[in-house]
Each structure stands twice: as structure tokens, then as C-alpha cells.
Image (cartoon, rainbow, N blue to C red; front, top):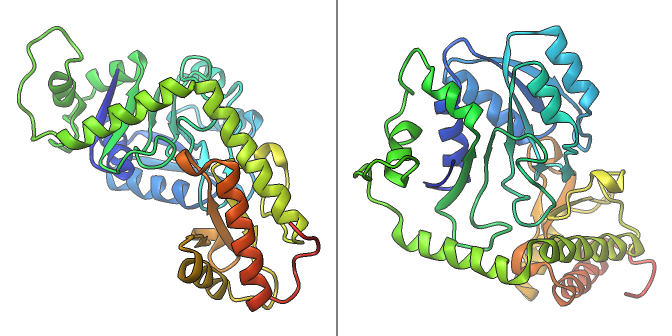
Length: 324
């Protein structure tokens, strides 16, 4: 069951919680950055019970971590992880986690806002029951029409709720009729985001023309070009394990004595290139560099590296150890 929620990725995130978390439901939330924190907050607002599974920023969860928590607390009904944690730059491995959740009778709930279309992922292969994303990141469409997928098992949970979801606008029972989940005639629920749907369709068409495997490879190659260039400048990447680095958002440690805002401001002012500071656990510690969608290309990465080197030479001393 797939639809586009009228709203940004945050709207799809809340829609998922509003429908699949009932009062008293125990939810295991992987917290290794800001999105785990946000999910914990949302679950509590919808009267769920949060079990926090925590790792420091820059680290990911293993299947053993999930298995241990599910064994310890058999009442857990959903397991939430963030596939691409944009605040810390980690890529969460998914192999085996869906099977572990199923074995323990829990639904696997995944944030793919920074990964859908850019990173290898398959809901069936990975056993994902609920996932939401955003249209403006990897897919390259304007924000406002956010993909949401729910499995048959998740729909069964929704149908067996003891109470109606505490939302009308995001009620998937109603949205399903609006989007034609069943053979019943569609009915009016709300005014659709017509322009956004056309834009999302075109973005998906462009992705289809390129090929999903080709898009995944392009993003990986762009990320590796970026990582190599940063390290040749003498900069240190925040996520140490290359297999756990998010290709779409790279986190770079801000060298001691450097004001991250000075560097970022220069790049925007002179080159119209925007990089961000840290978020959540990385605030003030890193730069976050997004390479996704149209920007995942060699010429874009090269231009960014040259602009960053220039900014560091002006505001950070001699960090570029080698010529690019």
C-alpha cells in the first residue's frame, strides 16, 4: 500500500506514528541522532511507550542489538530505525533486521527520507513494514508530496485498532479510500497537492529513465569522490567506518580553532554553495554536506571541494595538504 502524504517528510513521519501507534503500544526506537529523538517524541505524543536503544552519534545498530532488546521486552510492537541519519551521517545496515522483527512479532518501521532513490533498498528484501520518505531529497522534486508505504501486516494492525487514529487528516483508513487502496469508488478527503503530485511523478519518471541501479551507483561514486577529496585536504570524516557512511549526507569534523560558520558563509556568499553545520548531537562539531539527486555528479563535487579549500585557506589555515 503506497501513497503520497500531503505534506513534507515530517508529515509522513507523523502520519505513520498516528496510524500505527496506539495508546500503550511499546515501540523500540533506535536513537543515534536527531531523528530517533524526534521519533521518541512523536511516539510519546500519541501515547505510546518508548524503549530507547541508544548509540553515540556516528555509530549504527546491529541485528544483535535489535534481537537483544526484543528478547528483553517481548511487548514491543514496532521497531524504528533511521536508514540515513542526516544529523550524524550514518547509513544503517538493514540485512536481517526485518527477519528478527518478524520472529518477535514486531513491525519494522524505517525512515528513508535521505536514502530513497539514492541508496540500495528494497522493502520486500529487507522486510520493512512501514517506511516514509521525502520528495525533495534523493528524488529531487519540490517538498510537499511525501511517499509512505505500509505492508499488509501493518494494515492488519491498523484495522485491529481499538480506537480510531487520533487524526483525521492523516487517517490511512480514509486516505486509502482517497488514493484507491481498495476497489471502492474514491471519495473526497482533502484538497490534493496537485502540482506536487505532477512534480513527484516527473521526478520518478526521471529516476526510472536513469535506472535505479545506475542512480545508486552514481550517488556512491559521488560520495567516494567527495570523501577522497576531503581526506586529501587533511579533513577528518565523522563516521569512521566507510561501510556505515551515508552517501547522501557526509559529516566532516570541523578542525580545532575553525569557526564552521565562517567557512560555510564564505562558500555561500562567493560560490552560492550551501553546506550546513551539525544538527542534534553534532551541533558545532561538523559540517554536513549533502550530495543527492541532481547534485550527485563529479563536476558538482569538484566545484564544492575547490570552494571548501578556498574557504579553509582564508578562515582555517593550511588544511589542504595536497592540491586537488
